[in-house]
Amino acid sequence: MGGGNKIKSVAVIGAGAAGAITAAALKAEEAFDVIRVFERRECAGGTWIYDAAVRPNLLVRPGALPDEVDPPLEIPQSLPTVTRPNQQERFSTTPIYDSLTTNVPEIAMSFSDARFPYGPFAPHHIPRQYIENYFALHKTDSFLVLNTTVEDVSRIDHPSNDGSTQWKLTLRKHDAFQNADVWWEERFDGVILANGHYSVPTIPRVKGLEEYIQKYPGRVVHSKSYRSPGVYQSKRVLVIGNSASGTDLSRELISAAQLPVYQSKRSKAWWEGDSPPAGIEWKPVVSEYLSDGRILFDDGTYLDDIDAVIYCTGYKPSYPFWNTSKNGQPLWDDRRGKLVKSYWHTFFRDFPNLGIVGLPRVLTFRSFEYQAIALARLFANRNPVPLPPAGEQRAWEDEREQVRRRERRKFHDITWDDGETHEWLQGFLKWSGLGTLTGQGRIPPPLTKEMVWAIENLKKYRPGGDDGKKGPNGEPAEAYEWIVVEESRKRDVLGFV
Image 1 (spheres, one colour):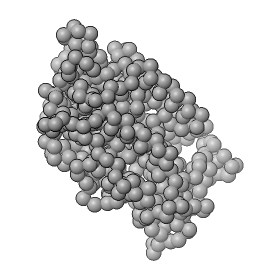
Image 2 (cartoon, helix red, strand yellow):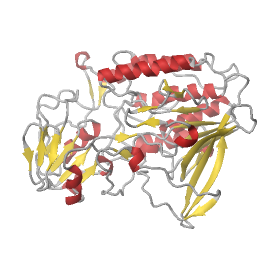
Image 3 (spheres, one colour):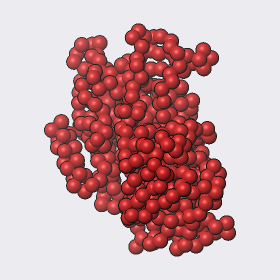
Image 4 (cartoon, one colour):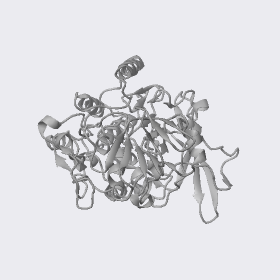
């Protein structure tokens, strides 16, 4: 950045795992006068907060993009002010279901200075408690501004008129006592986005699906509103998808739903065998929904009298607070599935005082730590090696997009088996370097042999299926038992994250 550290105030958006480690990394630099962590929920925890009561009819339009279903709110003309409570859906509830456990071994789900209390795959309340405690552990809980939604982020000129910029944040806090929304503005030298990407559910566009949803209200849901199998007692259920949530839901629905539970999938997951677990029947991709309730599949087969369709088809990143007009460009390209003008999945070519933590599909919490430390070091102007010039950053982005398009892979997915994860983390190590002699700044943690072994060998799902074995109540045998995988069975170890 040069010329001394001009970033003295930093806003972090989101108090999940990414926000927790970012706050700790910024504090450790001892270079910033103001650090704020804005969180729209009532506590820290991010996507790991459990919401027992959810709206089952919270369903996005098939094929709709986040900017269509999660648009920005209208900002009051004069601030500060108080308005009536917002009624627009903001997708703030989480997708946590009762039986959810982590997918990644706890050594990689933990930050380097504090481990989960147990593992390797912990129930969902453990990471939630861990994140909240982590703020207290580093005494960054005083940075938290809870029940506060960032509604607008706009770039403005720095008051010094030296050509640098700041960020103006428009904030909204619901006052339950007044039953009103309180609006105000704050300015920061730097902003780090840590708001996650598991908020806005996505459902693919399928012929006849919109009409089917209208004719049979409540029959189609997204896994975000699923909590337990009890409500599907004796019902004929079709689950769409076979990633982590699709696998979990299909297996546990066997205990309640009418058998078999149907599971529609596009391709084979690495943990699946040649035949489905007992109680589950595999189906190909849905090709059409008919007005009489019949569901057609790609292979010409069909199902009648389905009581519930659960879409386990994931989420799309959403940044409704980003003011594209005032910032001169969008932040995220929905159609290409990528950040705009980004570098190393963390930095922004046109905005040196903006960063993002937690986006790539990789080692979750532990990889967030590398991102956060590198950004904190850059914002503190203590990075021993500068980021590459804009031309090199552009070349990286263009080349990656071309390769990913050719390989039909997502831009921000990072693989393990081909060494890409190691290369990615090594970049943060280079830009972060060491802290100061007097102890300012965190140091990127080592990728230890213990962690590598756990990532490559400890698996939540049994590879190859369960060979049709049943438990005492008819459930798949050992459906939720983690195992150690033999060397020959390892493959695409981060593919489920």
